[in-house]
Amino acid sequence: MSKQANPTVIGGFVLGALGLVVLAIIVFSSGALLRERVPMVTYFPGSVQGLSVGAQVQFQGVPIGQVTQIGVDYLTDRESFRIPVRYEIWPQNVRVISGPDDAEADVRQVLQRLVNEKGLRARLESVSFVTGQYLVSLSLNPDLPARSHAHTPDGPIRVPALPATRDRMEELLTNLDLDSLVNTANDTLAALRDLAQSRALTSAVEGLSATLNESSELLAKLNASFAPLLERADMALGNYAELAARLSREVEPLSSQLQQTAQDLSDLTRRLDARVGPVADAATDALRETGNAMRALEGLAGEGSSTRAALDGLLGEATRAARALYQLADYLERHPEAMVQGKR
Image (cartoon, rainbow, N blue to C red; front, side):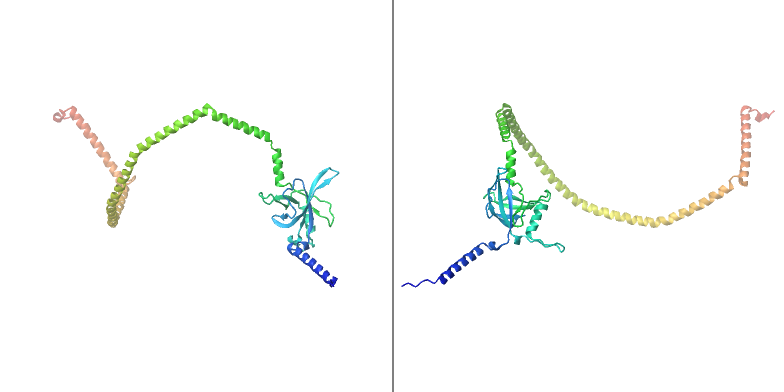
Protein backbone atom coordinates (compact mmCIF):
# COMPACT_ATOMS: atom_id res chain seq x y z
CA MET A 1 0.00 0.00 0.00
CA SER A 2 1.60 3.34 -1.15
CA LYS A 3 2.43 6.04 1.34
CA GLN A 4 0.43 9.28 1.04
CA ALA A 5 2.51 12.36 0.01
CA ASN A 6 3.06 15.03 2.60
CA PRO A 7 1.39 18.29 1.46
CA THR A 8 3.81 20.34 3.53
CA VAL A 9 6.81 18.95 1.69
CA ILE A 10 5.16 19.53 -1.69
CA GLY A 11 4.32 23.09 -0.73
CA GLY A 12 7.90 23.71 0.37
CA PHE A 13 9.26 22.48 -2.96
CA VAL A 14 6.82 24.70 -4.87
CA LEU A 15 7.72 27.79 -2.84
CA GLY A 16 11.42 27.04 -3.26
CA ALA A 17 11.01 26.75 -7.02
CA LEU A 18 9.13 30.04 -7.17
CA GLY A 19 11.84 31.71 -5.12
CA LEU A 20 14.53 30.42 -7.48
CA VAL A 21 12.57 31.72 -10.47
CA VAL A 22 12.20 35.17 -8.91
CA LEU A 23 15.90 35.21 -7.97
CA ALA A 24 16.90 34.20 -11.50
CA ILE A 25 14.73 36.93 -12.99
CA ILE A 26 16.29 39.52 -10.71
CA VAL A 27 19.82 38.32 -11.46
CA PHE A 28 19.44 38.05 -15.23
CA SER A 29 17.62 41.39 -15.47
CA SER A 30 20.61 43.05 -13.74
CA GLY A 31 18.33 44.42 -11.04
CA ALA A 32 16.02 46.15 -13.53
CA LEU A 33 12.93 44.99 -11.65
CA LEU A 34 14.12 46.74 -8.52
CA ARG A 35 15.04 50.02 -10.21
CA GLU A 36 13.16 53.22 -9.60
CA ARG A 37 11.71 54.58 -12.83
CA VAL A 38 10.38 57.88 -14.18
CA PRO A 39 7.93 57.17 -17.02
CA MET A 40 8.00 59.46 -20.06
CA VAL A 41 6.20 59.50 -23.40
CA THR A 42 6.87 61.17 -26.75
CA TYR A 43 4.58 61.30 -29.78
CA PHE A 44 6.82 61.22 -32.82
CA PRO A 45 5.34 62.79 -35.97
CA GLY A 46 6.98 60.49 -38.49
CA SER A 47 7.91 56.85 -38.84
CA VAL A 48 9.58 55.06 -35.94
CA GLN A 49 10.89 52.21 -38.07
CA GLY A 50 14.10 50.85 -36.58
CA LEU A 51 13.06 51.72 -33.00
CA SER A 52 12.21 48.72 -30.84
CA VAL A 53 11.31 47.99 -27.22
CA GLY A 54 14.49 47.90 -25.15
CA ALA A 55 16.24 50.54 -27.26
CA GLN A 56 18.40 52.95 -25.29
CA VAL A 57 17.38 56.43 -24.19
CA GLN A 58 20.43 58.70 -24.17
CA PHE A 59 21.24 62.23 -23.08
CA GLN A 60 24.27 63.57 -24.95
CA GLY A 61 25.46 60.02 -25.53
CA VAL A 62 24.96 58.80 -21.92
CA PRO A 63 22.45 55.93 -21.46
CA ILE A 64 19.84 57.01 -18.90
CA GLY A 65 16.89 54.74 -19.71
CA GLN A 66 15.20 52.48 -22.24
CA VAL A 67 12.10 52.21 -24.43
CA THR A 68 9.32 50.18 -22.80
CA GLN A 69 6.42 50.38 -25.25
CA ILE A 70 5.64 51.44 -28.82
CA GLY A 71 2.04 51.66 -29.96
CA VAL A 72 -0.48 53.42 -32.18
CA ASP A 73 -3.28 55.72 -30.99
CA TYR A 74 -6.29 56.64 -33.13
CA LEU A 75 -7.80 60.02 -32.33
CA THR A 76 -11.49 59.91 -33.22
CA ASP A 77 -12.04 63.65 -32.89
CA ARG A 78 -9.24 64.34 -35.38
CA GLU A 79 -9.57 61.10 -37.32
CA SER A 80 -5.80 60.73 -37.30
CA PHE A 81 -3.16 58.45 -35.85
CA ARG A 82 -0.27 59.17 -33.56
CA ILE A 83 2.58 56.95 -32.39
CA PRO A 84 3.28 57.07 -28.64
CA VAL A 85 6.74 55.89 -27.65
CA ARG A 86 6.88 55.20 -23.92
CA TYR A 87 10.19 54.99 -22.15
CA GLU A 88 11.55 55.20 -18.66
CA ILE A 89 14.39 57.17 -17.11
CA TRP A 90 16.51 55.59 -14.39
CA PRO A 91 17.03 58.12 -11.57
CA GLN A 92 20.16 56.36 -10.39
CA ASN A 93 21.77 57.35 -13.72
CA VAL A 94 20.76 61.02 -13.31
CA ARG A 95 22.20 62.67 -10.21
CA VAL A 96 20.50 65.81 -8.94
CA ILE A 97 23.01 67.97 -7.06
CA SER A 98 21.26 70.81 -5.23
CA GLY A 99 22.93 74.03 -4.15
CA PRO A 100 23.33 75.00 -0.48
CA ASP A 101 20.27 77.29 -0.63
CA ASP A 102 18.13 75.10 -2.91
CA ALA A 103 15.40 72.80 -1.71
CA GLU A 104 15.67 69.09 -2.33
CA ALA A 105 14.31 68.08 -5.74
CA ASP A 106 13.88 64.63 -7.19
CA VAL A 107 14.62 63.58 -10.76
CA ARG A 108 10.98 63.72 -11.83
CA GLN A 109 10.61 67.36 -10.81
CA VAL A 110 13.87 68.29 -12.52
CA LEU A 111 12.86 66.56 -15.77
CA GLN A 112 9.45 68.24 -15.79
CA ARG A 113 11.06 71.66 -15.27
CA LEU A 114 13.57 70.99 -18.06
CA VAL A 115 10.72 70.14 -20.44
CA ASN A 116 8.76 73.29 -19.59
CA GLU A 117 11.57 75.85 -19.21
CA LYS A 118 14.77 74.60 -20.86
CA GLY A 119 13.41 72.99 -24.02
CA LEU A 120 14.06 69.32 -23.25
CA ARG A 121 13.13 67.47 -26.46
CA ALA A 122 13.32 63.94 -27.85
CA ARG A 123 14.58 62.90 -31.29
CA LEU A 124 15.17 59.60 -33.04
CA GLU A 125 18.85 59.06 -33.79
CA SER A 126 20.44 56.29 -35.84
CA VAL A 127 22.55 53.73 -33.98
CA SER A 128 23.99 52.14 -37.12
CA PHE A 129 23.34 52.69 -40.80
CA VAL A 130 24.12 49.02 -41.37
CA THR A 131 21.52 47.57 -38.99
CA GLY A 132 19.07 50.47 -39.29
CA GLN A 133 18.49 50.57 -35.53
CA TYR A 134 17.42 53.77 -33.76
CA LEU A 135 17.40 55.10 -30.22
CA VAL A 136 15.73 58.00 -28.39
CA SER A 137 18.06 60.95 -27.86
CA LEU A 138 17.19 63.72 -25.37
CA SER A 139 18.69 67.19 -25.70
CA LEU A 140 18.21 70.71 -24.32
CA ASN A 141 17.08 73.47 -26.70
CA PRO A 142 16.88 76.73 -24.69
CA ASP A 143 16.00 78.76 -27.81
CA LEU A 144 12.65 77.00 -28.15
CA PRO A 145 9.62 78.71 -26.58
CA ALA A 146 8.56 77.49 -23.14
CA ARG A 147 5.56 75.18 -23.08
CA SER A 148 3.78 73.06 -20.49
CA HIS A 149 1.58 69.98 -20.72
CA ALA A 150 -1.01 68.80 -18.28
CA HIS A 151 0.21 65.78 -16.36
CA THR A 152 -0.67 63.79 -13.32
CA PRO A 153 1.80 63.20 -10.50
CA ASP A 154 1.94 59.49 -11.30
CA GLY A 155 1.48 59.75 -15.07
CA PRO A 156 4.27 59.88 -17.67
CA ILE A 157 6.05 63.14 -18.42
CA ARG A 158 5.26 64.22 -21.96
CA VAL A 159 8.36 65.25 -23.90
CA PRO A 160 7.78 67.03 -27.24
CA ALA A 161 9.48 65.56 -30.30
CA LEU A 162 11.91 67.07 -32.78
CA PRO A 163 12.00 65.88 -36.40
CA ALA A 164 14.41 63.02 -36.95
CA THR A 165 17.29 63.37 -39.38
CA ARG A 166 15.76 60.91 -41.80
CA ASP A 167 12.44 62.79 -41.66
CA ARG A 168 14.20 65.99 -42.66
CA MET A 169 16.01 64.18 -45.47
CA GLU A 170 12.73 62.72 -46.70
CA GLU A 171 11.20 66.20 -46.61
CA LEU A 172 14.09 67.60 -48.63
CA LEU A 173 13.81 64.80 -51.17
CA THR A 174 10.06 65.33 -51.37
CA ASN A 175 10.50 69.04 -52.05
CA LEU A 176 13.03 68.39 -54.79
CA ASP A 177 11.72 68.77 -58.34
CA LEU A 178 13.06 65.44 -59.57
CA ASP A 179 11.41 65.79 -62.99
CA SER A 180 13.19 69.08 -63.58
CA LEU A 181 16.50 67.62 -62.40
CA VAL A 182 16.11 64.60 -64.70
CA ASN A 183 15.21 66.82 -67.66
CA THR A 184 18.21 69.06 -66.99
CA ALA A 185 20.49 66.03 -66.77
CA ASN A 186 19.10 64.67 -70.04
CA ASP A 187 19.63 68.01 -71.77
CA THR A 188 23.19 68.19 -70.46
CA LEU A 189 23.97 64.66 -71.67
CA ALA A 190 22.47 65.44 -75.08
CA ALA A 191 24.59 68.60 -75.35
CA LEU A 192 27.71 66.63 -74.40
CA ARG A 193 26.86 63.97 -76.99
CA ASP A 194 26.39 66.60 -79.70
CA LEU A 195 29.65 68.26 -78.71
CA ALA A 196 31.51 64.94 -78.84
CA GLN A 197 30.11 64.24 -82.32
CA SER A 198 30.64 67.76 -83.69
CA ARG A 199 33.12 68.48 -86.47
CA ALA A 200 34.51 71.46 -84.55
CA LEU A 201 35.65 69.25 -81.67
CA THR A 202 37.23 66.80 -84.11
CA SER A 203 39.11 69.62 -85.83
CA ALA A 204 40.21 71.00 -82.48
CA VAL A 205 41.52 67.59 -81.41
CA GLU A 206 43.37 67.18 -84.70
CA GLY A 207 44.86 70.66 -84.36
CA LEU A 208 45.92 69.92 -80.81
CA SER A 209 47.53 66.68 -81.93
CA ALA A 210 49.46 68.50 -84.66
CA THR A 211 50.54 71.16 -82.17
CA LEU A 212 51.78 68.49 -79.77
CA ASN A 213 53.76 66.84 -82.56
CA GLU A 214 55.35 70.16 -83.53
CA SER A 215 56.13 70.84 -79.89
CA SER A 216 57.83 67.45 -79.60
CA GLU A 217 59.95 68.17 -82.68
CA LEU A 218 60.85 71.62 -81.34
CA LEU A 219 61.88 70.14 -78.01
CA ALA A 220 64.04 67.59 -79.80
CA LYS A 221 65.77 70.37 -81.78
CA LEU A 222 66.26 72.41 -78.65
CA ASN A 223 67.81 69.43 -76.89
CA ALA A 224 70.17 68.93 -79.84
CA SER A 225 71.10 72.63 -79.83
CA PHE A 226 71.60 72.87 -76.12
CA ALA A 227 73.89 69.85 -75.88
CA PRO A 228 77.01 71.69 -77.23
CA LEU A 229 76.15 74.73 -75.14
CA LEU A 230 76.02 72.59 -72.03
CA GLU A 231 79.40 71.07 -72.89
CA ARG A 232 80.89 74.54 -73.37
CA ALA A 233 79.35 75.69 -70.15
CA ASP A 234 80.91 72.73 -68.35
CA MET A 235 84.30 73.59 -69.87
CA ALA A 236 83.90 77.25 -68.93
CA LEU A 237 83.04 76.30 -65.38
CA GLY A 238 86.10 74.08 -65.23
CA ASN A 239 88.34 76.88 -66.54
CA TYR A 240 86.78 79.30 -64.10
CA ALA A 241 87.49 76.96 -61.23
CA GLU A 242 91.11 76.61 -62.36
CA LEU A 243 91.46 80.40 -62.74
CA ALA A 244 89.99 80.96 -59.31
CA ALA A 245 92.45 78.51 -57.79
CA ARG A 246 95.38 80.21 -59.58
CA LEU A 247 94.26 83.67 -58.50
CA SER A 248 93.92 82.41 -54.97
CA ARG A 249 97.50 81.16 -55.03
CA GLU A 250 98.84 84.44 -56.52
CA VAL A 251 96.76 86.81 -54.47
CA GLU A 252 97.85 85.32 -51.17
CA PRO A 253 101.52 86.55 -51.38
CA LEU A 254 100.34 89.86 -52.88
CA SER A 255 98.08 90.29 -49.90
CA SER A 256 101.02 89.69 -47.59
CA GLN A 257 103.07 92.33 -49.46
CA LEU A 258 100.21 94.83 -49.26
CA GLN A 259 99.97 94.27 -45.54
CA GLN A 260 103.75 94.86 -45.17
CA THR A 261 103.54 98.03 -47.32
CA ALA A 262 100.70 99.33 -45.20
CA GLN A 263 102.78 98.69 -42.09
CA ASP A 264 105.77 100.56 -43.61
CA LEU A 265 103.55 103.54 -44.52
CA SER A 266 102.25 103.60 -40.99
CA ASP A 267 105.80 103.68 -39.59
CA LEU A 268 106.82 106.44 -42.07
CA THR A 269 103.82 108.51 -41.08
CA ARG A 270 104.76 108.27 -37.44
CA ARG A 271 108.38 109.33 -38.23
CA LEU A 272 107.20 112.29 -40.35
CA ASP A 273 104.90 113.37 -37.56
CA ALA A 274 107.86 113.33 -35.19
CA ARG A 275 110.03 115.48 -37.53
CA VAL A 276 107.43 117.88 -38.87
CA GLY A 277 106.47 118.99 -35.39
CA PRO A 278 109.61 121.17 -34.71
CA VAL A 279 109.57 122.60 -38.28
CA ALA A 280 105.96 123.60 -37.84
CA ASP A 281 106.79 125.28 -34.54
CA ALA A 282 109.66 127.27 -36.18
CA ALA A 283 107.43 128.31 -39.08
CA THR A 284 104.83 129.46 -36.58
CA ASP A 285 107.41 131.62 -34.78
CA ALA A 286 108.62 133.14 -38.11
CA LEU A 287 105.08 133.98 -39.12
CA ARG A 288 104.54 135.58 -35.74
CA GLU A 289 107.73 137.78 -36.20
CA THR A 290 106.65 138.72 -39.73
CA GLY A 291 103.29 139.80 -38.40
CA ASN A 292 104.97 142.00 -35.81
CA ALA A 293 107.16 143.62 -38.52
CA MET A 294 104.17 144.30 -40.74
CA ARG A 295 102.33 145.91 -37.86
CA ALA A 296 105.43 148.09 -37.20
CA LEU A 297 105.59 149.16 -40.88
CA GLU A 298 101.90 149.90 -40.80
CA GLY A 299 102.50 152.14 -37.79
CA LEU A 300 105.28 154.04 -39.63
CA ALA A 301 103.41 154.45 -42.92
CA GLY A 302 99.91 154.80 -41.54
CA GLU A 303 97.61 157.79 -42.00
CA GLY A 304 98.73 160.83 -39.88
CA SER A 305 102.23 159.56 -39.05
CA SER A 306 105.25 161.95 -39.50
CA THR A 307 107.10 159.42 -41.57
CA ARG A 308 104.15 159.16 -43.92
CA ALA A 309 104.02 163.01 -44.24
CA ALA A 310 107.76 163.23 -45.00
CA LEU A 311 107.49 160.50 -47.56
CA ASP A 312 104.53 162.24 -49.18
CA GLY A 313 106.51 165.56 -49.39
CA LEU A 314 109.53 163.81 -50.82
CA LEU A 315 107.40 162.08 -53.40
CA GLY A 316 105.84 165.48 -54.35
CA GLU A 317 109.27 167.11 -54.87
CA ALA A 318 110.44 164.14 -56.88
CA THR A 319 107.32 164.38 -59.03
CA ARG A 320 107.88 168.11 -59.72
CA ALA A 321 111.56 167.53 -60.56
CA ALA A 322 110.66 164.77 -62.93
CA ARG A 323 108.06 166.96 -64.63
CA ALA A 324 110.68 169.79 -65.06
CA LEU A 325 113.18 167.37 -66.56
CA TYR A 326 110.51 166.11 -68.92
CA GLN A 327 109.70 169.63 -70.07
CA LEU A 328 113.44 170.40 -70.58
CA ALA A 329 113.96 167.28 -72.63
CA ASP A 330 110.95 168.10 -74.78
CA TYR A 331 112.19 171.64 -75.39
CA LEU A 332 115.69 170.47 -76.37
CA GLU A 333 114.18 167.95 -78.73
CA ARG A 334 112.27 170.68 -80.51
CA HIS A 335 115.11 173.32 -80.25
CA PRO A 336 118.46 171.53 -80.36
CA GLU A 337 120.29 174.80 -81.15
CA ALA A 338 119.55 175.92 -77.65
CA MET A 339 122.36 173.64 -76.50
CA VAL A 340 124.86 176.08 -78.26
CA GLN A 341 123.11 179.42 -78.32
CA GLY A 342 121.21 179.13 -75.09
CA LYS A 343 117.62 180.02 -74.56
CA ARG A 344 116.60 183.35 -75.83
